[in-house]
Length: 577
Image (cartoon, rainbow, N blue to C red; front, side, top):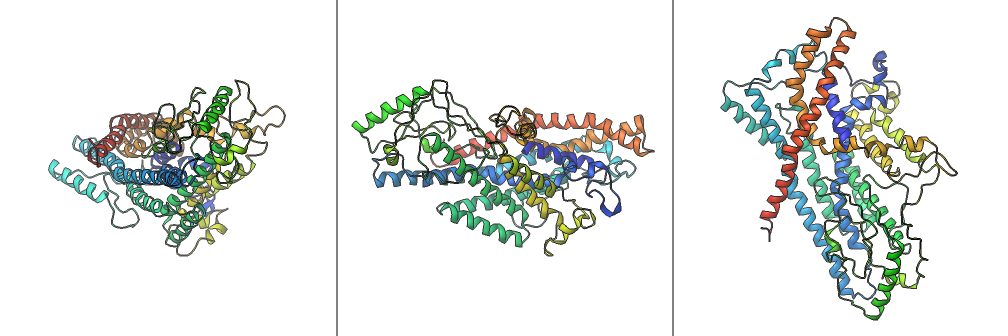
């Protein structure tokens, strides 16, 4: 989802130089092109993708801390544990939470600001080498760029002046001191204005998680919703999106833990009793238990009764700390998914390492309430605890919500009050809301992420479209998770930040050169048909080129920056090397 959103932002900045894309279908009695229809227009719309990006950021940054918070509130799985031991376990989880938040805060600035500093430095080098001079006249020629002429970075008389200007721009880019629109944006690359916003919102999000960590789940959700309302009143749409991402992550954590508890044989009530279809925004690998595991488990439980060890910490066969692993998403927005075969059997000791996902191994079944339940009958060796098939029609509500969210995301960026289908909705926007187009786009982004998360994972989907009890065929063909879990989407997700950082300089150098060549030497610009044909021919070179440069930047800059931030943290923390 992140990768597709970043790619759409690039297309927006590519298309809007030549075409009027901000107006909706039928706006002002014109603009009746098919590509301006609601939903259709989303593939090249940038502002809705920014909203989606902020929801995803709030979700991904909150997921690991929320797992730690919920694990600290779970009942102890050892019936013979003393109160002091259980208290120590909970305190240990809160200690891990503090460690996690400290790491997130420390590394967030390096993660967000160092890659743009490098990308803008490379822009300065390109400028001094003359790459921006190739197209300086073209960048402001309305005969070619008929809609938006972006700032084409100015070349100074001396290299010293140029690099000093870059230094001041980087200092201003790390903008912490106000929340003005586009605060911290730089003329070196005008597309990077969202990064300071992302940083400021991330810091508030971490403070929110810390401040609500010890609250009961319902109270925490109420407090965050109250803050969302307060932010809405002040038109802080970015904070609304980050906080809603937190709430979506909280709901998914509860559902995952409840599902895991049921698969391990816990009675209802061990986990919150809120359940719905779907596997969350990010896929989760479920634990697999074979018959052999059940037999060993019963033998181990009998040995535990004969030889209780109330003060022994829970360990896995590998003998590692369970509380150190609470991550499905790594601390810097990376999802970490691992699958485990049935050889990872639950043992009397059930502690895990920090390298394995939360749902990869089963916890001890020695909860006191479980002792009174008869063990389940043995299953055939091939039987596994796979996700239950979703009933027919279970995607009806998510599909309805998805369609509504796509329509809301399609709110035109300008003149929505003159656009059929939006005139009435625009009149409902509060008078204090100055950026009208953010209003419904923000709502649509939250609803979109939520509705997609309620679909079953494409890997585990039971919708084959045939056989008794199967869902309608559209449930499998049009499952949006199939798109976001595809190899292309996963690859774009890896290079998403790099796409965001490099598409501007690529367009202003090679991109403008290719566009100028196709219009002046191949198609001409005398008619609209010639103009569009030249643009499409240039796209055959420009679009793959942006993806390739982003791949190089991801491998050469983005990934090393992530590793550098981790190494720096390891060096400077207390007890670090």
